[in-house]
Amino acid sequence: MRIPYIAGNWKMNMTPSQGAALVKELAKQVKGCNAKVMVAPPFVTIPAVVEAAKGTNIIVAAQNINEHDSGAYTGEVSCEMLMDLGVGNVIIGHSERRIIYKESDELINAKVLKALSHNFDIVLCVGETLEEREAGKLEEVLSRQVNVGLKGVTASQMSAITIAYEPVWAIGTGKTATPEDANKAHAFIRSLVANLYGKKVAEETIIQYGGSVKPSNVKELMACEHIDGALVGGASLKAEQFVPIVRCGVLE
Image 1 (tube, rainbow, N blue to C red):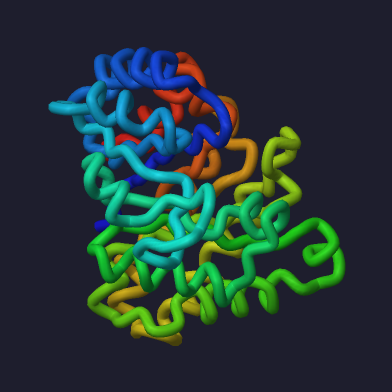
Image 2: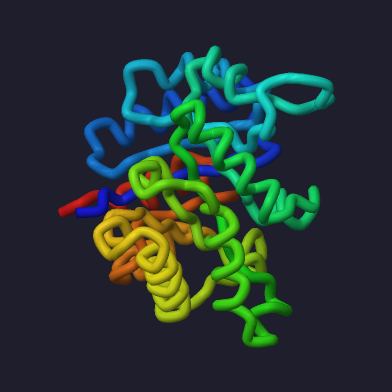
């Protein structure tokens, strides 16, 4: 059985004091929850959030990593730096990294392999733009992003990887893919994983939906066969919005 996985990507929001306060509040309300719960603060906020999350069921992740261990990479953060803070989870390939910072599928793959070499758990993001969807390129885009993103990853390493499908046109826009469309994309992603690693691995792979997830639409999304959780943006910044989303992911 796939355990529901609800993750909050804070993006460039939350100071250290704000992040710590939010996690303390979240911890009270999701205590004992059997869904997997994660938050991904900005780098400078991570130490305070890690401290606040100690002894709770909240996982702390980074929003990005560098594909090298060290060196002349101004402004970058390595896996070892994060490990020293007590972080072993990371989001890789978010659409904002792909589009704004021009990260290629090959670079994202290098980051995936680097994170795996340090035993990180990964949320690998994939998804199409509106132009790609309207041009009928959804499956082409997802095939490329999944196949290149997972190049060199072994079947045994897939237990460390969650895939997040985030249609770019739905992120931060208030628009959401219909549950039917989202489930269809998730099913296609699962078929790609099956082609690479076999049916058993595909059935065990968690696939989250990301794209303007909020309390009002999460229940319908989570009811879909192939949607195993959510990668939440803006709604993860307030406990009163994020907690209902987490609660919707609780196994009955």
